[in-house]
Each structure stands twice: as structure tokens, then as C-alpha cells.
Image 1 (cartoon, helix red, strand yellow):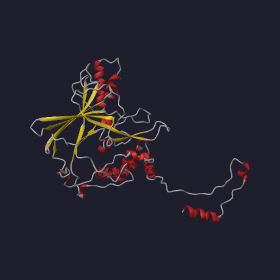
Image 2 (image 1 turned 30 degrees about the vertical axis):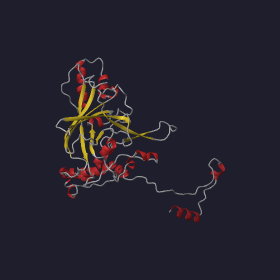
Image 3 (image 1 turned 90 degrees about the vertical axis):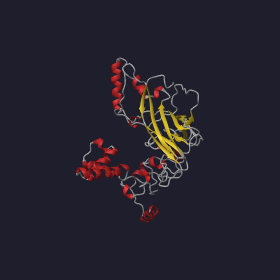
Image 4 (image 1 turned 135 degrees about the vertical axis):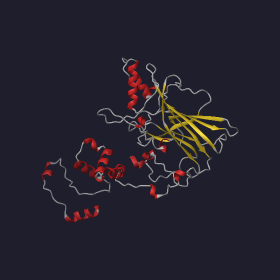
Length: 401
């Protein structure tokens, strides 16, 4: 497909830009993305895959862009009675164009890159765990994913190519995948090292970003259009599309019956970025002036993130509404953990939240003494029970203590 062979719906997205130079003076970098290589050594889940100490060298010098998609792309849905959440597929092709002033004259130059988010990438690309299909299929593989290349000078053209991976907002099983740049940097992000001599040491930069699906069947707008009742006339299809957009929190001007868009292009423009070279500490700006001032922080503690957030919201809300903060905290915690869907009483809610505050902990082995008799022999079953002698009970207690 080419980008001119159909009517497209343009979807604006948010793009964050980050300048990186010398080691920051006000903070240290933290990489909280899951380290899936741990799965090759042992069985880990959730937080165990992360380095909670936040160690890491931080992003490389230059400019980093993070593509943040609309809420409609990050919300999962399920059918009635379904156990699984389905998330929309994300675009797997991204075009990034840098606009900058020439170092030799005042001309505005451009440089463009194409990102294939689903393609195998270099060693520093995002690690994507590939689970074996069967127990005999071999060990877990970590596939480096996301490839960025300079766009060739010839006109870009790509056939209708199916995505190599299904990429969603929860990516490879991490709920924070699309929100945390280190976790998606080569899939929903871009790094410009700005080392080419054409770029001035001090200049302003602008970046145009556009994303789309390499395969028409992956574009869920086209899936919706193709799934419309063929008996609908043009006005009926237009009304259905407008309702579809409304359900996603979107609106579109200029839609015409009989000329409905069939594909989507996600786009953003970041402009006026003040690049001052790789020797600059970009943390030395006004926003970080009070970063070490304790008055700017609050601390809330709970057995889980849900409890901590509920404590913060309950205190703030109770002061305004004169509500019972403890009861409000329980309700807010239950809301986050899904307990309210069962319509519990206050007593049941309190008991369940109390129960969830305890978890089994592996503390080692416990030894016991059992009879050698087998229940398969009726004679053994008929024998009366004989207690373990006291001296053996004492030895067993000492062994387990």
C-alpha cells in the first residue's frame, strides 16, 4: 500500500520529547521495564522481573521521542461472559521526520526515518519474550524487537504486509508497556543521536511523527467499515461511523456519506526543541529547581499500590465531604481491586480486604513422622493408632524449630 491509495482518518496523538546530555545533577535515571531474560533462569512474575532499585545508565545522549496513543487504544474490552480482555492492535509502522537548520546556511533541512515496530531489532532494542508452543519446542527466546532505519531517498512503498507480532498497549504482558518509555523505546519511541555534522551545536529542532498499519486487516477502522451491514445505505454507514467514533471518545469533522475513511494515520508534531549539544545537563532547568524540597512531596503507604492510592484519595476527599476516611479508603480499595462488582455488604467488604492483606510465605521444609502402613492392606487399616513416642516428638520439634 501507499499512503495515498485510500481516504484516511487522521488521529492526533501526544508525543513526549526528552533531551539527554551529560549525567543529570538533580536525579538518577531509573529503568523499571521488565527484564525478561530472568525467565531463562527461573520462574518470575510481575514485579520480580523489574529492578526496583532503578539502577541503569539511562538513555543515550541526543533526543528521545515517546509516542503516546489515545485512551481508546489503551483500553481493553471483553464480550459478555468472556474471560479475556482484547486490546486494539497498535500501528507497526512509524515515520519520523526531523526539521532543522543547516550548519552552513539558513536553509531548513530534513532527515527521515522509518520504524518497523514489529521487525527484529538490534541488541539494544526492546526484549520480547517468545514462549515455546509446546514443551518440546525448546527454551524461551528473547526477541529484540523494533528496527529503525534512515528512510531511503527513493519513494517509500510497501506492500500489504502482515505484522510479524501483535503489538498492543500491554505489549508483551506488561501493563505499563506503552506508558513507560524504557519498556517500549524501540517500538513506540525514537532516538536521534544528533551526531551528524549538519546539526548545529545550538539550534531548534522539530519532529513530525506519523504511524499506520502495514496490513489493512490490522487497521481496526477498516475492520469496522468492512463489518457494517451491507444493507445500510450511505447515510446509515455514516451514522454508524459517527457512533463508533463517539464510543471511543473521538469526533471527526468533514465526514461525508459515500466517502467514509477506511484507514487511520496517527500523527503528531513536536517543534521548537532547544538543542544545546550533548555536553549540556538538561536537568538544569526551572522545573527541577525545587526537586529536593521535601515540602513538594507526599508519602502514602499501603500493603499494595491500590491501598496507598486509596489512602491518599480518601484523606483528600473526606476533608471536603466530611465522610468517614477509613470507610472511604476501604471502598476506594475495593473499587480498584474489583470487589464492588459482587455487591458486598460493608462487613463482607471489610472481611475480604482484611483477608487479602495476608499472603502465604514459603518458610522452608516441615518434617513429620508417618506410619509405613499402606491403606491398600485391610489389616493395616484395622490396626489401632499408636502415638509417636515422646522422645521422637521432642526430636521432631527440635528438627522443625
